[in-house]
Amino acid sequence: MAFLTPGRARLFMSYKIAIVTDDAERSRDVAVAGSDSSDAHLVDIGSDAAPQLDSFSSVIIDVPLTSQKSVAAVRRILAGISPSLLKVFVADTASRRDYVQANFLGAQDVVSRDLIVGEFDTVVGKRIRAAEVAATAEKIEAAYENVFDAVQRGEPLPAESLNASADQVSQALAGNNIETWLEELKKHHSYTHRHSMHVTGFAIAFGLHYRMRQADVHRLAIGALMHDVGKAKIPLEILDKPTSLTEREKEIIARHPVYSCEILEKDGQFDDEVTDVARHHHENLDGSGYPDGLVGREISDLVRIVTVADVFSALVDKRSYKDSLPRHVAYAVMCDMDGKLDMDIVRAFEPIALGAESKAFPSKLEH
Image 1: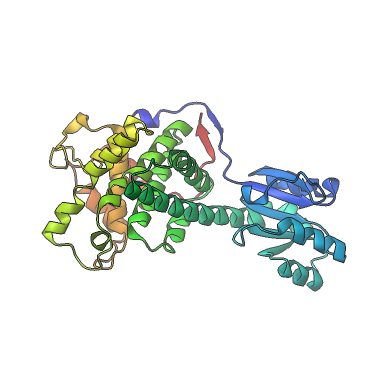
Image 2 (image 1 turned 60 degrees about the vertical axis):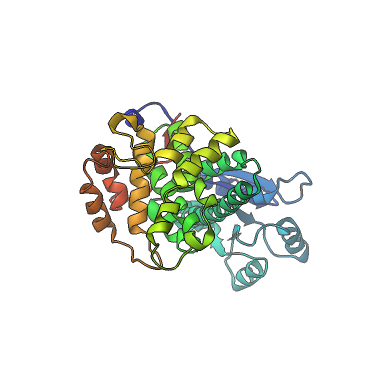
C-alpha cells in the first residue's frame, strides 16, 4: 500500500512546555533536559511580553519561593490559565515549605532540580504527555459539539479548528501508545463523540506505528474525525438510545453516510478524500456494504483503513445495551471478515488492535 512507503522523516514534537524563571542562566539546564523530547521555551517571569501560558502543554516553574515578592510574581503569571494545565515546580531544596507553597499556587507536582535535570522524561515527560492527551480529548469533544451545532444551524463547519484538532490528536499520540488515549476517552460520555474519537485514535495509531508521512497521518486523522458527521442529522433519542435499536431505527442510523457526504459537499471546505471516507466507510469489498454497494478497488485505501478502525472501535466499545468485546476477540472477529475487509490492512492493524506495541509511538513522521 502507498501509505506504508517509507521516506524522509522529520521531528513531530508531541508537546510544548514553558519554563517560567527569574534567572534564565540558572534554568538553562532544565530547558536542555526538556528539549530532548519537547519544544522547551524559557519565559522570563518579569517580562511584560511573556507569551500566553495557555498556548503551552505544560508549565514548569523554576522560581525560588523564598519571598512574598517571588510568590506574588508566580501567582500573577499563572493567573487566568486553565486549572487543568500541568504545573510542575522545581525546588532546589525540596523542603516541606517548598511543597506547601507550590501546592498553594496550584502545583500538580514539586520536583528537585537534580531529579528533573537527570531524569526529565521519567519524572516529568510522562506526566506532560498524559496531560497533553487529556487536554486534547477535551478540545476534540468541544470541536464535535461545535460541528453538530453548526450542522443543525445550517452554518459553515469550523474547518480550521477541525484541521488543527486532527493535528493535535496526532501530536498527543506521538510519544504515547494508544492505551493512553483509550483510558482518557473513558471519561467522555457521549457515545457518538467517543466513538469518533476512538476511530481517530486507532487510525492515527496505525499511521504512527507504520511511520507514515505527516501528511498521510493528517489525512487519516481528518477523515476519521469527520466520518460520522452525518449523525448530527440523526435524532438524539436514537443516537443515545439506552436499549437496542428497532429495525426502523437501524434504517435511520444507516442514512448517516449519505448525510455525512451531503454535509461535507455543501460545506465545500474539505477534500474529496474526506467526503469519500464519510460516505463509504460502511462499504465492503464484496459489495455487500452501503450506501453504494462499492466493490473491490472502487474502495480507496484511505477508506479501507478508516473502515478497519471503525469496525474495531465498534466491537471494543461498550454500549448501554451491549458489552465490549475483549480486544483479542474483536480482532478475531475482523479476521473472519475476509471478503468484506481488506485483510492486508487487518493484518497490519494487529499490533494496534492487540496492543503489541510495547513502546510509545515514534515521534518522527515522514515529511
